[in-house]
Length: 482
Image 1: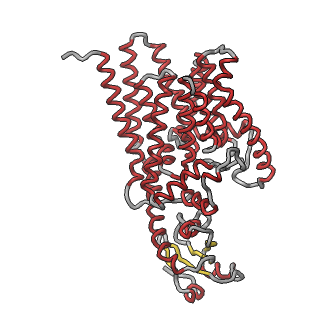
Image 2 (image 1 turned 60 degrees about the vertical axis):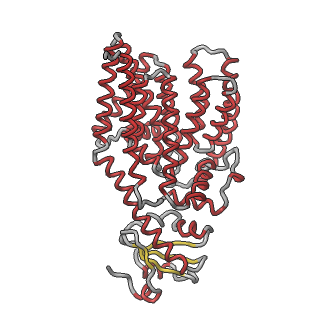
């Protein structure tokens, strides 16, 4: 039976999709293994609930320039109310939102003219990046995952321009704004979409589709400008959240995040990634490729809010922006092949060869120490935190509420207890009940805090995560030996 060219294309698309799903699953499935526990911001965010973070406390306008994200906090509150400290079902929820992001991204890629094969391949890269794996398996980064979901949903609805689309797009825009601050750039991106669709649109057409977005945008811009001005005046020198809104800071941040996205650690590799990125941007400019330039602008704008805070740089911040960077690269590859190869079959063969090279690179990367080290670190910290959580739960009934906890942790980093510190104990009690102090020795702790009244409790943390409470007499008499 003769297989037609169209059937061959379809088979290749299905095969690529299957491989993509398998590779994306491999990149995050490690988070579902048993014995893992919550860590860091996943604990400190829960501490907010002790002061009553609920939907009734959600405000439309922000009260703070940074970290005023009620949608994400309420999402965490809901998961905690349902699952408690059980990490696995909560990370499954994160992965489902991440999957929805990939589906919405595929729809947008196709609307922008990227072929099915290249769209799937670009999303395969997105789903297997270390920055992606670290973000979607970290419940404390739900703000980035949720914000991207609402932004993509708003864009997808806006692109179809059906009756009633504008109010739905606006609703998603508001949810994105209250999930994380970088959503403030969305109306600019939507305005760019209008001009990419029609370089000379009528003003009435633009206002019909965007007037509500622009009105809300203006209100939030004014509010954030006032809050940022207050934040700058209140931020003390040396604070890592100090804002440096200048071109040099933004350029330095971009030169950090772009190589980070593509796993470039060595100086030569970093420069190679930056040069290739600039070459791709240059091609888009020379070709006046509107959609590719829009995608590059979307990358810069979405990462801009964190680019002006050089003291704080996390891989989670790249999760949403990198999707637009990959869209830009896919659009340029599509345009290069279309320009260079006129024959459809030959162009498809060249595209298939490109896909094979990219997929092979993805498979190779997942086997590198770079990726494995990040996975192993997260797994180890979560396993150690599970040990600490078990021991802390056993010790808690013997501790008087409203006590001071002095913890000797010279053997290792007490990952579970660091937030707060000791937010975990307070979340266990469901109220702010304990104050914690870490020190190099129990004698040192005792001397430094001798004026603190009782009740006091002394604990010893070991590098395997175990936590024990020696008798007060022995704790005061000598520094523990191992």
